[in-house]
Image (cartoon, rainbow, N blue to C red; front, side, top):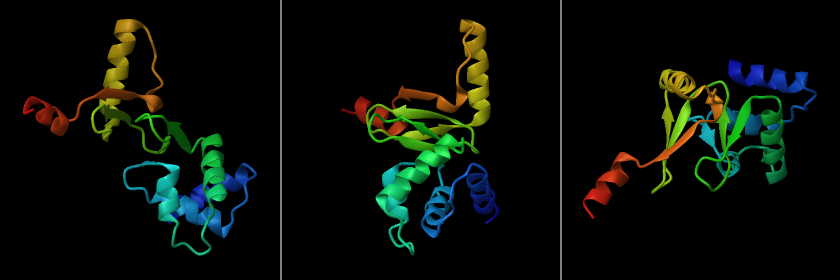
Length: 145
């Protein structure tokens, strides 16, 4: 797993220790298929790891990875902080009804940022874009109600 070893090297370069528990946390983060996860998701993913990382290790690792720029915390759905891997650039649309989070592809985000900059002369932080709206299933349910 080259990404795991590369990330462990980045942690060491920033003065962080690499323990078996921290390695398990990092593996769970890198295995997060949709690149979004909460601390609770990571805790559940490492539940069977040996040694099993405790809650403090998970939170400290998330904090360290945020400090060194590998993760970005995003308050996407108004509940738990959702972490986003910075090696996968994209925006987000969040359903205001069910809370579903859908990724916006990078090119669509670039196009949106360019249009917004032209229209408003405002440059957005593309890694933090979360647009609220209604997903297709919720919109359909509302029209049938």
